[in-house]
Length: 169
Image (cartoon, rainbow, N blue to C red; front, side, top):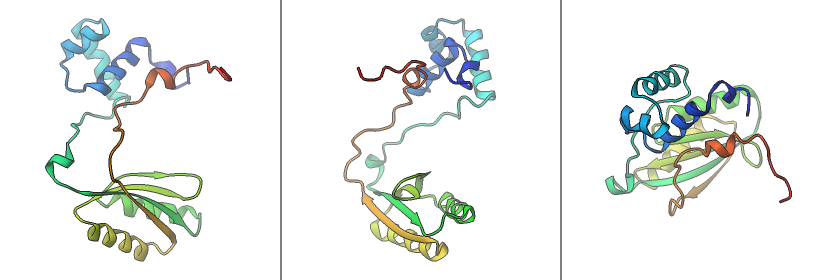
């Protein structure tokens, strides 16, 4: 187990794993699932929140039912790898409500950003503005999302915390 996770015990990990799949359950339901009393469960949950092991709770909106946004994944390359260029682009993307997620990556590009926009013209305006505001951008490649094939449903906590890896089997 890594150092950060070693401060959590088996019950804390079970609480995290359970809540990431159903954050709406009551404290009593959670306590039953992890085999704790309601008060002990509440104390542990509060500590997990206070120590930022849990980063909040949110609902998953069925956006396709609400409207029909154009969703794109953009790979952005910079002409320079100066830290200021990265910070500038990160701030610009962070200020864009249509930018849902952004990642600084290694490989053939420097950033991957997922957008949801009302129309393709809105997406084009956003990327054109980015290029104008950030002249260090050397390339933007757009991938229009045709179908969301797998949705994020939580981290595989037990798999990620395994201490022994079996190679070659």
